[in-house]
Length: 495
Ligand code: PHE
Image 1 (cartoon, rainbow, N blue to C red):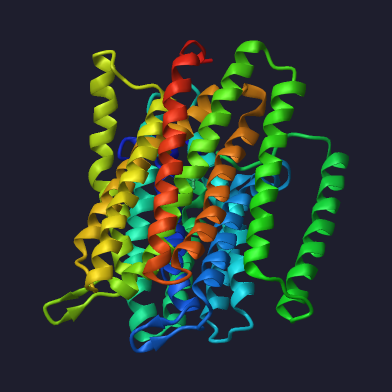
Image 2: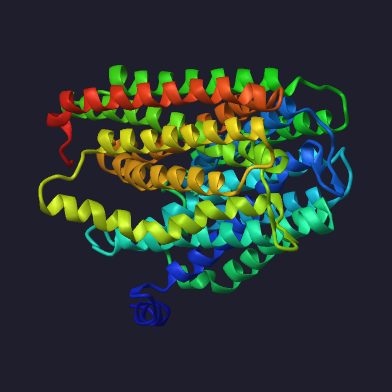
C-alpha cells in the first residue's frame, strides 16, 4: 500500500471512504448551481416577477425552451458517460464538466439576450459530463461486496438536495430581487466553489475513476479524432445559431427532440431484446426495465413542471406575502429538497419494515405508487386552480401539499429505479443501461416543457384540462404497472 493509499484508508467521512466527501461537496455545489438557475429560468424568460421584468416570451415558448434544456441536460449524460469511459476517465470528465458548467452560468450572468442560449448550452454540456460520471465514481469508491455502497449513495443523495435548497434560497433571492443576472452569476460562483474544492481534494479519490477503459492506443486516437470532429461540428451549429444564422421554433424543436428520444430508446430496447444475445431470463428483465423506463419518463414529465407550469401558477395566483415579507416565487421550490431530506429516512425504513414482514412491494408496484402520488399532487392542483378561478391569490398550502405528494412519489420511484437499473441490467451492458435511466429523465424533461406550455397557454383556463389529462395518464400507467407486476413476479430475481 502506498503512503497515499494508507492515508486515504485511515481517514473517513461518516464511516465512508474519504473520497466521498470530495464528491459530496462537488455534487452539492453543482446541484446548487443547477437548481438555483433552473428555478429562475422560466420566470426570467416570461414576464418576470413584480418589479423585475423578464424577456417577455410566451409561456408556451418559455416552457418549450425549459423542456429542451432539461431534456438536453440528461440526454447529454449519454455522450458524457461515453467520453469518460473511453477517453477522459471519470475524474477528468467531472472536472471539465464543472468548468464548463461554471462558464455557462457566467455566460448567463452577462445581461445580453443574445448569449442566453449559449449559456444554457454550456450548462447542459457540462452537466452531461459531470452528472453521470460523478455517480460512477461514488460506485467505484467501494469494493464489489462492500455493504456501505447503498448508504454511500444515500449520503450522496443528501448532497443533491442540500445543494438544491441552497441554490433556490440564494439564486432565487438574488435573481428575483436584485437582478436575474445576479442570480445566474451566483450559480456560477457556487460552481466555482465546487471546482476549487474538487481540485483541492481530488487526490482523496485515489485511483477511483482515474483512468478510462483499457484499449489499444491506436483505437483511442481514432476515437479522439472522431470526438473532436463531432465537437467542432456541433459547436459550429450552436455558434451559427447564436449569431442568428438560423433559428427554429422552440415548440417544434421540443416536439422533434421528444420523438427522437422515444425512437432511440425503443431502438435500444429492441436491440437489447432481439440482437444482444441475451438469455430468456435476461430478456424478461429487459422487458421489466422497459416498463420502468416508461413509468419513470411519465413521472418526471409531471415532476419537472415544478420549474415550469407550477412556477408560473405560483407567480400569478399564489399569495406569498407573510406579514410584511414577500417571498420570492422560486423559494417555493425549496419545499421538494426539504421534504426529501426530511422523509428519505422514513421511506428507507418503510421498505425494510415491510421487507421483514414479507410485504415489501416489488419495483413496478413502487413505480405505480410513485405515479399515484404524482397524480394525487395534480389533483390537489386542480382544486388550487378551481379556487384561484373564484378568488386569486390562493394560499401557499396548495403548493405545500402538491410538492409533498410529488416528493413522496420521488422517494418511492427514484432511488428504487436507480438500483433496479443497476441490478436487473444485463451485466455486459450496465453502463449503457444507466444511460437509459438518464434518458427516462431526459424524455420526462422535454414532456414537462411541452405539457407545461399547454397548461399555461391561456392562464387558468388551460390548466384544468391539461392537468386532468395528465392525472388520467399517470393513473393508467400506474394501473398497467400494477397488473403487469403480477406477470413478471417470477422474473424479479437478482443476478
Ligand atoms: N433530484 C434529483 C437530482 O437532481 C433528480 C434526478 C433523478 C435527476 C434521477 C436525474 C436522474 O439528481
